[in-house]
Image (cartoon, rainbow, N blue to C red):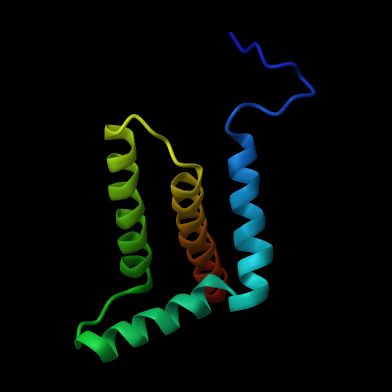
Length: 106
């Protein structure tokens, strides 16, 4: 049974809205679309290591970092807002890139 009043956001909604704002406004205004930003990331990574990543690989690597930190936090009985926020943000970027790529191929 949902006990949240109709005019109140469902618990968890706030962090989704915060991540959306960060990815679609703050970061995009600073770094451009995630596809452009992560294209730079994978090019720099290849220059440094000689290894080729896809954009998806790069984002999933960042999600992995955040999930490792989340696990550490939870094992310590903590839940850090920033870790959750960053994880949601990286997954949002992955979704944005997927939809951007779909649009380009249509």
